[in-house]
Structures are given as C-alpha cells and as structure tokens.
Length: 596
Image 1 (cartoon, rainbow, N blue to C red):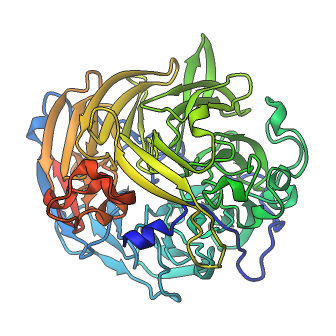
Image 2 (image 1 turned 90 degrees about the vertical axis):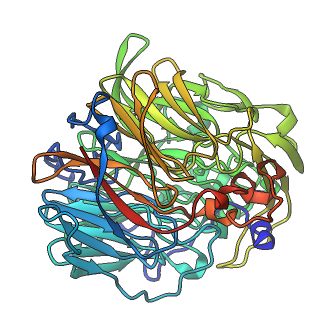
C-alpha cells in the first residue's frame, strides 16, 4: 500500500466522454426556475439549502434537553467502506445512500425501524478504477418532480423514481478509463441538475456539467483548463484583479500543453444562488504535484468559480493557490450567506480552503473581502488584499523537498462541510491539524494511471492533536472558540435554531456542543467512526430527530492497520495521521436516528 501511495500525485487530467464537446450548450433554458422553499422539517438537499449552510430552523432539541437524546432506530448498510455525505429527508421518506457499489434505500418515517420500502442497486457497466482512498459517494439529490439523482462512482449519473426506486434515465458523466469518476453529490437548481467529476490524481482534466433534470439532456459543460471556448468564458474572469485579464488564460498560464492533463477536478460540494442564477464550486489542484512540469499559475485550478446555471458560462473566478505545489485544491464548499462586512451589507460567499486561509468574498462579483489564517499555516504569510494572491514563504517556494509544511496535503479542512448559524452569526468548522514533508519527483502521464509528482509524509501539527473544531467569525476573520480532537475531524457539522452544533469524530463519538460557548453537552459512542454528516428533520409524529451514518473509511482507513509499535508521530507516509485509529474503532456502515 505504501508503494502505491508514493505513486500518487494528488492532481488531475482531462478527458471527454465520447461524442461530447465542451462547446455544447444545447438550447439551455433562459433561466432555471427558482425552487420553492422546502418545508422547515425536511432535509431535501445535500447541505439542506442551496447555500449549503447546513443550518436547520428546528429548535425542539436544545442545550437544556439534549442530554436526553437517545438512539431511536438504526439500520446496517452491510458495507465496510467509508460512509460519506448524509441522508435526505423529504416529507415522510428518508433516503439513504451507500459507498460504491452504490445502493439507495427508502424508509417510511411513519414506521420507524421497518425494513426499507425499496432498494436501488444498479449493476455497473464498468469495474471500479483503482483510487487512492476508496470509491466514495458523498450524496444524492432530489427534484420536486419526485426524482432522485444518484452519482454512480465509475462515471454514470442516474435519475430514479423516489416512490419506487426504479431507474428513469442514466447518462455518462465520467470515464473510468482515464480516472474520471463521480464521488460528489450533484445539486439541483430549478430544473437543472449539476454534476462534477473526480480524477485529478490521474491527470484527468476536470469539468462541471449541467443536465436537464427531467430528461437527462446535456445542457452545458465547462472545463477547468484550456481555451476560453472550453472553459465557457467570455471576457475577463474577474474584473477586480489585473492577473485575470486576457484571453485563454487556461492555456497561457501553463507550460506547453500541460493543461491537457492539468487536473482541476470538481469533486467537492456545489452551492447556488437561485436569485443570481449562479452555481458556485471549487476546482482541484493542478496535475502533477511537481510544479516544474507545468510552469505558470495554472488557471483555473485550485480556484473558486461562479457559473451561470442556465448556460454554464463563467461569471467570475478567483484562484486561491496559484501554481499549487502542495495539492491543496480549492474544492471545499462555498457557504452562501448575507453578512455585514466593514459596515456594509454583502451577499457573501465564505470558503474555508484547504490551504489554511478562510475567505469571505462578494459572491456577486468575486471581490475578496477577508482572507485570514484559521489555523497553523506557514507555507504563505498572507493573502494580498489588493491582488488576492498569497505571499509564499521563501522557505517553501523552492522545488525539491520541503519539510514541516503546514497544513498538509489533506488540507487544514478536507471535504467535510462546515455549518452556519444565522442566530449566532458564526460558522462551525471541522478541521485537521496536520503538517507534512513533501518532495517533488518526476511524473509520467499514462491514461488511467496515477499521475503523482510528489512523495508525502504526514505528521501531527502544533500541539500534537490531529484535529480541531472551531467557531469562526467571517466578518473579522477570527476564531470565537475551539475544541481539540485526537484525530482529524472528518465529519461535517450541523447547526440548529436550538442553539446546538453537532459533529462526529473518527473514533466514533457523536457530539453536541453549545453553539455560543463550544461547551460539550452530549456524546454518543457509535459502532464505527464518522466521515459523514449529521442532519436533523421533523418526522410525521411532529418530533425533531437527528440522523447520521457511522462507518469509517477513505483515507483514514488506510492507516488503521499499522504495526503494533506504530505511533501517531511516526509520520507513516500519507497515512501517518491515522496510525492508531484501528485501536479505537472498526469499519461498518450503520444509519443512526436519535430522538428525545
């Protein structure tokens, strides 16, 4: 396994499913209709709302009574892989997905604990490709017409009937032959379903695609690298900054034709502002990790991009880590909230980047408002407010081996989503506390094979703890409170109107904290560790419930079987952060539903 990990360069390549061109924008709708507000007791989108705030207005469970929370019912998925993402709840139905090979279950909340109403478990047309950290699935999406959209890891997007589980249509969105897979949750905006791809570690060229939610018809596809015609860009990518002026920056900021295997995967969370008609997402790191093989800023990798939902055209882009030599990506979620920054109301986008900086951005224009470190970050000293470009510490700018770089390749924050509370005006963020030694090495591109360009060794960050959970004020760029964790926190967060914050730990503790103080109020030991996200919903009985799927896996599972003498400080390659996790928990997916 270590030999395989050393071959990985956490980067990306490009490929196009047969018969498709990047310019395809076949009769896009003038503008997607605005989706009616979901009932407050539902959890009908991956992040509950289009802005992925993961905030619930339910308030029956409070700091006063949360100690009475008990397990209400459970369901074993039968899978020993990592259970990422979260269930959806629409009306009296709960929909649960599993890792690859993906299965989807429907449960009747009028009959809690009963067997599933149906199971969707399609046969795959392809074997799962080799990947570094399991064939994950981070979620499904729902449309008011009664459809569920299921990303099938090897590369298909399926629409199924939410009443029966029968498949309605299925389209090819990826290509496992070149490493283009589908672990990410799609997002429904009006009558458009938007889906991304993973595959940067194979040198796959990333893209985002919009489909007609009713028929599966391709509406548009925009690439992360290449000419403006492929990227779907007309005019400057960001009018606020000189470095974004000029044509075809997706080519001219790359040496030779390295953009063709340039990465920029779209494997992270998607968010949208239906009023502005925009979908927001981050792109992955450039490939390979060795920057000498792709000289230049490498646009539009490690960036945040805002596209028009109807056409896919870029409204603005902001590159967070130009010429990313550390594998940070820009793929983390973008929370859309209204804030007051420096006395001015702003339609804001808040992004906690893997590179260690938290960004507050005007989501209408792409202008940077705040960029501050939210933990131990030494690769760069600051982000210049005038250019939005990070100032790299000279100690880490030279090629070759760089030691003690913080954060690590896993990022200060991995894929686990943060939450926002409009009551406390705070963001709640699950974090890693890891650093690394990283060395650039030559990489050779072969379609469908790892395209690395670096070797990595992970170690715990300052203080020795490997995880943190913080409350963040995005208007000032400051930490309100912090909780330390033994392992990286790879569960998402949930905030409620009851004043509580929930998250899970890798060793299997589900926790409730007071949102104002960070004081722990309740915990439950689950059968397995958490890499998924808690949700809350209102059941037909009128009561509020909490649901999450336990089931450790992915990158953490790679380090769960070390030698008996291994220590967390050993830095066992890319899995050293999890060297003793196998002594604290075991794999196994179980849906857990709690109530008062």
